[in-house]
Length: 453
Image (cartoon, rainbow, N blue to C red; front, side, top):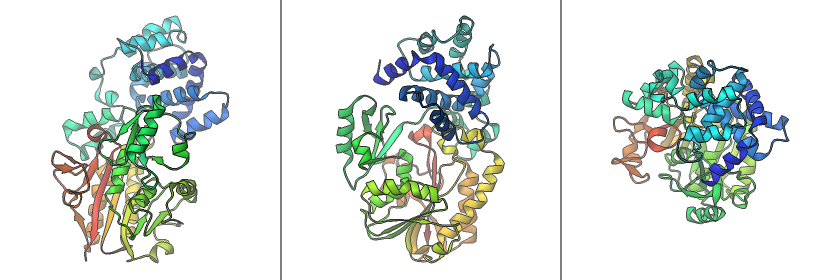
């Protein structure tokens, strides 16, 4: 049994009270009034006596419920007792099965750990759920998606790939780090992590040259390498997306929707802390969260700028002066369902339609910053063409001074190659895309635009 498996098994010993806690959390999550991580964090703050291991199991099972809500909710209707308890027990069972506890039949191993939690009449009921053949479920139940998202996936992948993509998004995402090359190199950090062992054991990410993938999901805040800015949490796909811009030393670069700055810090390191890198965002709070990360990064070329909107005067003053612009546009986030499963239940066709108008406005304003010959990367973590290809096509129709560049040509010398193409480059068009079922990353879209000289 691995260290992770032993840890989960140990936590199971205290499960009776955890079923109650989890039932309360799930009830609150089902309101879909706030992001799931906010709901879970707020509950933990109001229950400070819960230990770190207790919180880890409750959080893990909460997100399991959100990923598998359709099948868990449907089966819960067949049980007895309070609904919150039924949902909590099923979510714990799935969490333990997916963690691979014990040997032999995973469902029976998980049931054995739950034995001192369940009532006698619940054991057979849970066993029935644990042994369901998922391929026999109705399609929407099996993929645990609203019908509109299931249908929309066909805009990004072939019909044959829809099911593998949807099922890949039911699995929890790994914990990836980006090595801060201003302070260290990947091999050095891998040595530090593997010396720590256990949940810190790590390996290189398959594609991102400065990425590290941890075997577990340990707390990082207490570790010296993290406190001193040697690494940042960043999905491998996000790291690859930053590489699309290919910023050079001494250039003027803008991260137009910087948020808390994960890609900003990545771009700054690629620029070797030279030139000038503006981090624009409409949220003062998000930019404030960037400041402590920036302080420990060792970068001196990053300049956070709070703007009212995409047409702020601070933006207009830089028109025609910038070499490269990254527009990681606000989007539905449906490419991140492995780590943000609540989004599939909180988004709607109407909310996506509203976002596409904003995305086009942001792209149009950001493009005015570029010098002739400058590069702009428009990106989202969405898998829906309405937010991706259609936004870029609408922009190009109104801005003939820009052209779409073929990622297969632009990135030929910069990216690892899969099937003869740079990672993420489509065989059939000029879009750059990453998928959980193919690349093991979050789902990302990118378009490389150039202002004609």
